[in-house]
Length: 156
Length: 437
Image (tube, rainbow over all chains, first blue to last red):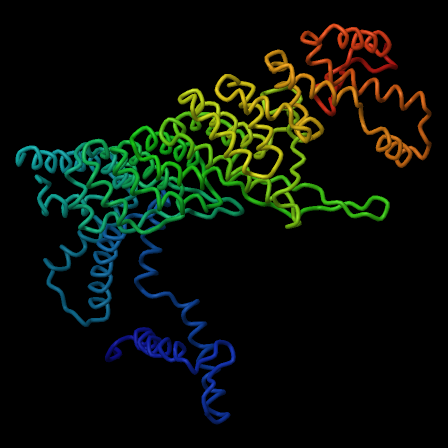
């Protein structure tokens, strides 16, 4: 049976946003908890909630952060890409990930053609990182640079 | 401005799958027209941060900042605008690239980067940053931006305190040892940059440059001692800097030492450019209370004696200068060179002080205090004779006959006066171990 609605992690993160606002309130006194008038039970609950959100933030990175980590791990240079490029790659990976999850959980019944095109996207994505075609890729960059600088000189 | 079309920018971003391609892309760009569209696409939004590796820190190159440095001569205004919009980073290599870009800009534009550059100097890690900032000071000074060049020099060469001032207790009395102020960067480069930039700053700012280096020296002296009561008084410079001129007695080399040379050289360059400035420079230096400034003023009077002859004779006939051990070296050299040119009256004043001799009572009590034994009359007589001989040694060639006869008599008895221009002279000997001879 497939779960309905957003994943639990998303719901917790959503609640976490509200929690962050609460601890930013004037009555929240850091480690000492809530300074306003509350009974002991609620105070104990707030302390437990704080422990939970501290743990969640440290131990459960967002899917986006996890994906960035995976993609960075695939680049042997270990050097990060600029945010716009990295976000583009994360988005591409996330789309593949979501598609195959939906297919494997039978949330989508794909056509052969559709599945084949996504398989090719995934394969290309992985091969670009695991078996890069260095010379072809750099030639492609050279062509783009030439095209862009041709634009500039043509317009000049 | 002509620039690459948005679809080309999009294609470029999609083509960069790994760091190698992204770095290659920026290295291949030869036109500055990419800057603005890439900036709008967010490619300059996040400089690569330093990477901690164990107990060390790695500073990766940022291809974007290298590209900006390369494009700066071609489109300096755009490069400047983008650099100013890039968020602060701790990556020193990025700072270096920005400074390379600034060095390729017209000085008026480069000056806009200085407030950022001053913040970069606070970093613990600096690599080649000081040298590049030194170059920027030169470029700004030569390019008519004297004020901003002085501001940057004030921060770059600022001495900083390190550690506590130590004290020692001798016979129940606590004495403060001096603390050596540090430079913000390697001392070797500190000396080199000062030497290079003093002429540029003097050419651009004249006496303001002298005031800057005097301020920095004053700050270094202030940091050397903990007691506020010491401020404006003693600096013991005759011990740590026996001679204002370059001399083998001057060692070891420290920030204070290099700043003394910077004040001396900046004053000297200023005087060379404008002989009328000597009097003002002497006045400016003497207005600062510490002896080192009076010593530099005496040095300046010796090098440029013709500019203000009345000041020269006034200093030589000042009893306090004659007696002051802290200015002995510069006073003695000035006296040696200028005594012959003094008026007869001035010569007689100085010779009358020599005739009156030293304060033998102070010698007697001092010797007794240190050795515990009261000096004999012969010892006191010898001390007075040596004192007179040392005072006359620098002017022996210009003495009247009767004084010269006396001087020669003392020299026959005592031998030649050794280094009379120094209150204390250090010597060392290097040779084989006695047991091996």
